[in-house]
Length: 180
Image (cartoon, rainbow, N blue to C red; front, side):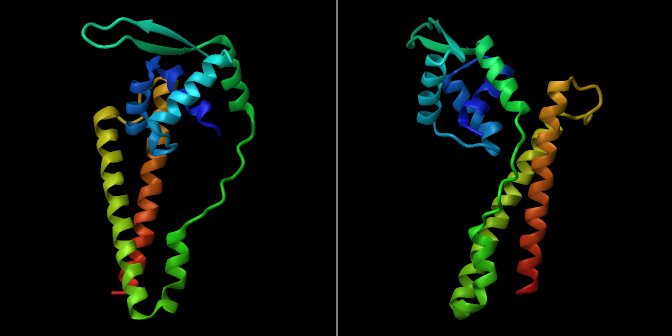
């Protein structure tokens, strides 16, 4: 997947400026596909040159004008084509898992460093899990009942995030408990 596809999805959900997209990435899509503010603007310019998006200049009071991007018919076609392309499995790459496996070779100082890293990762996963659960309660208090197809897709991706975080947290907790 390229950043272009993530931006097309975000813009199909709602047209936005580059700054608004950056903020939305930080709150939603960014949990699954990250991008910097600069990357977003660079890719939007390329997408506009390719005819995938069009920008409308919006005049603002007391602030510089902003460009609000929307997906063109060509962008919609590109998104549909990408959605129809099979998704290859992403290989798991975890530096932490390799360190956990090799912790026995680091002596007591190496083991202590790995355990501290595992504790920090567990804390990070706990924070993300709490955040995802908060979003679920706030945005989907009734669960999937009565959701539109778009809302159901968003809900299920959020549920996937919750399940991934729960799995990571369970695994890291098991490692910590086995070494306590």
